[in-house]
Length: 301
Image (tube, rainbow, N blue to C red):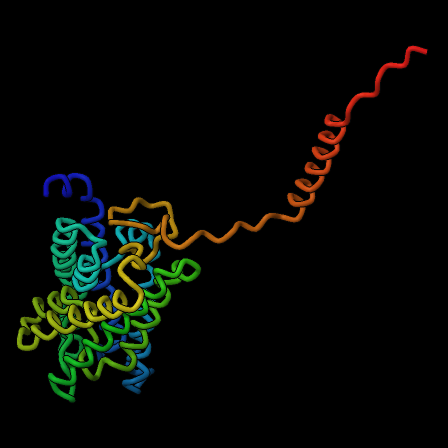
């Protein structure tokens, strides 16, 4: 434990900062888009259109975190359910998983606290309510099924894309796009969480605990199911690493096989270099033929 803390503390701090920044963004954009005193509800009266704006904002937030220097280093899990899934796949060591999850919860709580300090009563207003996630008009059962489904689909896409070398650098874009679509379409069903730390942080500030259990169970279940289906279909060895973005020079603390996974594509050789190499081979062939040709006997007369 102490060795993990001593060697990997920068990644743990990053995994606290990621959910914290995500929650600051969630609270700030919720105030901007949904608070009645904001200019956005006055200009955009349609509720679905406002959800689309919120989805775009949070999708871009997720993309920014994944492709940031910090996200490239820690892997940008920002979600205990994601870390748990990669732990199940053998990519994250036990103490790293424990410290990642603890950091994610603490970071998310701190993020809502910062947003509350900056935005005051605006974020506490019932139209925003600290960006709390809760089941919609279809009830708890529908919300549970929806959270399992969207979490399953998200991690299926992440596993498929991040473990395909020609697509792996685009993983963050896929994640951001799905977050944007989910918020736009699925929010009325479950509130769109997929993240126990994110839901706990909002519930902690709003003191709303009634359905928090749903967000502690459904997202991990969906992601673990995605891992099970992926490994049973393609095998555990097809999971190369636990990072969302690995095409960078940042160190990796996971059980990583990215460098030794799929074969690197053959490098494209410029035409000039090919022509030069062909000329060199022709010269060498000429020299070898000349060297091997037997010398003529000396002429005495």
